[in-house]
Length: 293
Image (cartoon, rainbow, N blue to C red; front, top):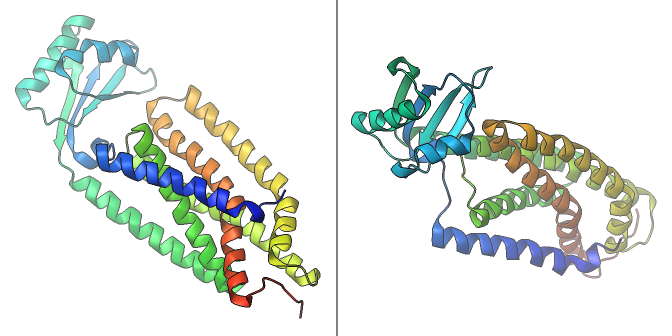
C-alpha cells in the first residue's frame, strides 16, 4: 500500500470533515447535553419496564426533548433529563400525566433535581487540563524514546482525532455530555498506542535499511504493521458495537463516541501521523533521502 503518495487525499478528507463540522457547528451550534447546559432531572418508579419511546410519547406534549434512561436491576425506574428548567408545578404536571398513564401513586415520584451549567464548565475545564497534561507527558516520552518530530506528529494526530469526532458529533447532532468527555480521554490513550506501533517500526527500519527515501521507508513500515493495527481495532470495535447494540442508554452514550474515536484513531495512525513525519523530514533534508549512519 502506497500511503505517502496519497497524502493530499488523506489530509483533504480530514480537512473536509472538519470544515463541514465547523460550518454545521456555526449554523446549529454543538448539541450540548444536560451535563453542560443545566436543566431538570426527574426520577420515577414505573413499577414495570416501559419502553423509552412509549414514555417519550406520553410526555411529548410538554416538548421537553428529554433524555430517558432506565436505572436499577429490574429497569423499572427511569430518569428523565431535560435541558428545560421546570418549576415545581411543571414537574408535578409532567408526573401527573405519567401517573395517569401507568396508574402510579404519588410515592412513585422518587425525586426531582434542578441544576445549572456550573458542573459542565467544571467538566470541560478538567477535561481540557487532562488532555493537556496527557499530551505533554506523551510528547516528553515519545521525544525521549524516539525524537521530537515523532512526538509532535503524534500530538498533532491526537488533536486531529478529537476534532474529527467533534465534527462528526456536530454534523450528526449527537448530544455531547460527560460520557463523551470520558470517551475522548479514552480515545487519546488508545490512539497514541496505535501511532507508537507504527513509529517504532519506522525507527527499526531506519536502523537497518540504507539509502531509502522517507516515503518508501514509511510505506514499508505501514505495510508491515497495518494488519496488526486493523485486527486490533476491529476486535475492539466488535466488542464496543455489541455494547452499543445491546446496552442501555447510558452505555450507548459512552459507546458511540468510542466507536467513532477508535475508527478515527486507527485511520489517523496510518494515514495522518506518518505522512506528517515524512513531510517534516523531507523539508529538513530538502531531497527526502536518508543515509544510514
